Structure formats: C-alpha cells, structure tokens
Image (cartoon, rainbow, N blue to C red; front, side, top):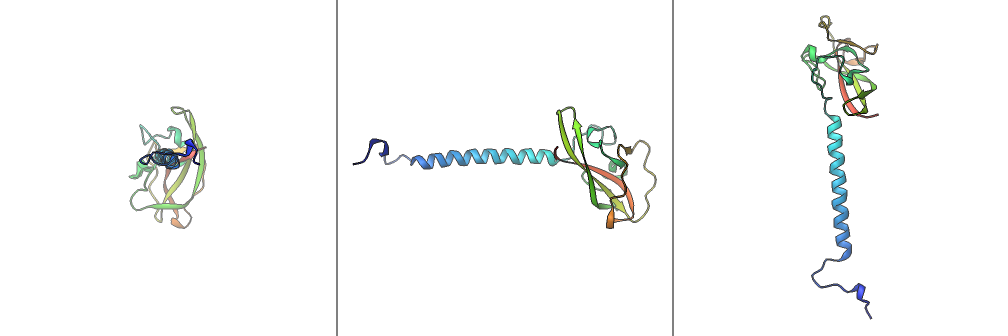
Length: 149
C-alpha cells in the first residue's frame, strides 16, 4: 500500500528536484555576490585627487606617487617594473567606515630617476627599497587595495 504523502501527479517534478533547484539558485546568488564584492575590493582605491598623499589609502605609503611620474596605482610608469616585494598597511576609509588592507609596491628602474616632483612625495611610512632584483632605484610607489582588515 502507498501512503497519500508519497503520491505525486505524473507531471509534477519530484520534491527533491525542486529543493535542488532552489539550493542551486541560492548558491549561485551567494557566489555572484561574493564575486562582485571581491571585484569591488580589487579595483584601485577611489580617489578624487590621484596626486594627493592625504588620500585615506596612502596611510602606510612612503615614496613618490606613480601618478606624478606617468603611472598610476594600477600600473608602473613606462620604463619601470614592479618591485619583487611589497609592504602592507591597514587604512581607515571614513566614507565607508571600514578598515582596508592596502599593498604598497615600488616601481623600479636601473637608472636613477629625477627628484620626485613637489607635492608628490608621501612620507607616512619610512620604507627601504622594495625593488629587490627588479632594479637599483625606486622611481615611485603604487597603492593597491587588497581587502578588508
């Protein structure tokens, strides 16, 4: 004898399949949310003035801004390469009321660069050269948002 709760209409999908679909949708929704959050954190920090040492994400920076040398926080200036090491700091963003993990990377060259332009040298942190085998001279420093502290 078959109980009434086990009977299904011929065209109804099995109960398990419905639960699987909703679980897949829920998982996909959470996964897409994770990807969007990660992508947001990995982009360059927002800045209204890319040539300012007072930007919140420069709290641990020591060096010349790459934007003053023809580069940016996402790429080294022409004729330079990324250093082989980096240093990190947790910086507070008042607008979002969050503390973010920021990576600082030197852009390096084998030829000595001219002096850093006026107003472009950030001295929030005294750092040695992080060029390693990438070059003898630090040309500038990039700040890249890594995640949340």
